[in-house]
Image (cartoon, rainbow, N blue to C red; front, top):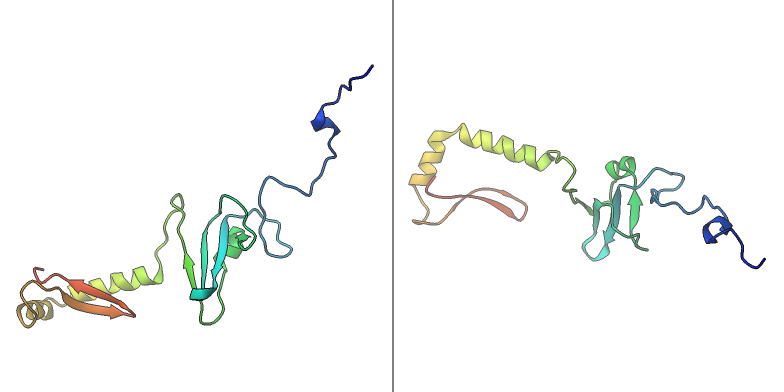
Length: 141
């Protein structure tokens, strides 16, 4: 009589505590996680990217709603890493760059005067500046 017909799976106690789907880390939110939030304290930056392969102890998994509404403390920057499979949405910077390009194209006389005057032969011309970034135009254009 020695052997039992039940295998190890049938004898295990069923539990609804462990789920194969990772859930949002926000309190009282049970939606499935779609993004992972990590803080880089040295840079005062919150990085929100696609859902990490493994749950890490110092990262937070967020659902779609909470990842969209994410804000950072005053003085901190939020960096949103795009998921390659997700469609890219234009940001405020993209729209501002497009508006600046349209304004620049509408001023052909000023552009010709800048290209013809000052500047050394093959050096690019600084067109605009935003923080530490510079927009350069080739003198050939």
